[in-house]
Image (cartoon, rainbow, N blue to C red; front, side, top):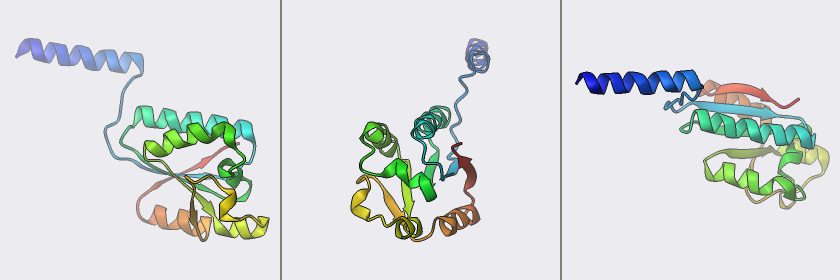
Length: 139
């Protein structure tokens, strides 16, 4: 019994000391992305992967609008594999249809992994009302 407790304490101490503490909670995290810069998109993808490393059970939704929808355009082949890997881990990416109308974009212009919502702001409000934590992403 004492050996088990000592081993458990050693594992916990090592985890805390190395900064490798992993949350097992099912966090519900809502990101808003409005930045269209490719470098911001690369950093944001890294951030999403970091979140999933620290909290693998997290539910994540990324709501894009304004220039942020550029992340999900089908001409963005450089990031498609990284985005697909995130989708495979359960991340949901959605595009604001209001932005699409304003920018004269069609659903066919987006990567197949993209979902769509009528209004990004209403999506953000509804998720927060349902207990999701809001984070403004990007620049």
